Length: 233
Image 1 (cartoon, helix red, strand yellow):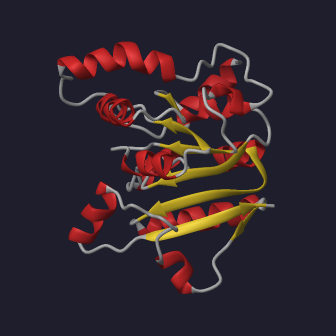
Image 2 (cartoon, rainbow, N blue to C red):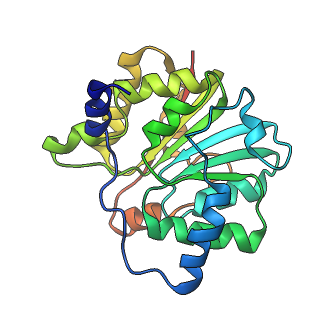
């Protein structure tokens, strides 16, 4: 990677703090033993078939960036065992919580990455994913921080490269400015078609949506959510 590429990536960082409360003993054990077994190794060449990352046969491939508490990722992986999921989450405490669910449920269709999602996106093969989920990402509400929002022309270009023809980019947020920001950026990119045909389409949660803690918080605070689906064209 060149120095200019490193500088570019640094300006795109979408996450803030990496750690919260100290982990308990069992959590530390999972972080030390289970996470290395599930972590996608970017030092190795990306496989010709991304399905080979998984120890079980998978028919579809789905990436969730910033899975937070992991409720959505665990729900989807449980309901669709024939789909291989890659979950990205740099926050240590969230990763520890997700690992406990993976272990207790015996999920074998999940791989994980605990650092900058842009590095993973750059590693992935062309046209390898069926879907990318970006759900309640940090909105970076102050204008001076907008450059840290994950939706950018640089990252949309990454999405477009790794999605299969007709692949989906699904975005959810309760922050109106970020919803509008995403709509404008996808329009300006030109490689994504917004699938909504009427207002109900983007106000209605995605099919099979389990809800998340962030959505519940938004509702308690009186904010509605938008659910946007874009198709790669």
